[in-house]
Image 1: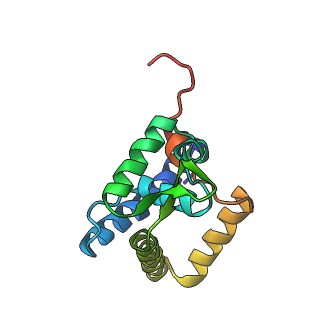
Image 2: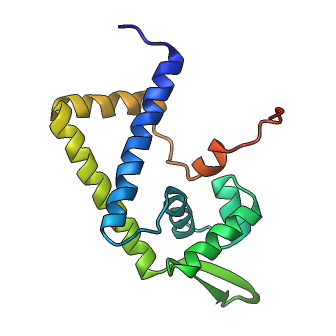
Length: 159
């Protein structure tokens, strides 16, 4: 059975979505009903040094306003804090809280469980082969956190 390039892209996207949807559902069962994929991307970017709305927006390829809204939601839910910068009292720095890091760890554990489920479905050798092939195709560059902005980017085309 030969598939088109578009079919391959959609199949890869659906694989990603099925894992993410299952992870969101499992996190909700574990008491994190309010966590969405964009929150994971944002917290990881913040933990990696995006300590203000402008920098978070750049790293996620979203507007500063969109980043600020995400920060406000994460702060309201206790996943991040906004504290005064010790070097510049006019500046507020964002940091992931212990609760935020707990959500990230729980999410990683859930994805490990989902990987184990896929391994049981297709076998360890097949899954390792799939991962090796995907790694060869996408390369070894660092994982990017700009997926939310990338997915919603404006290409300057009429709607």
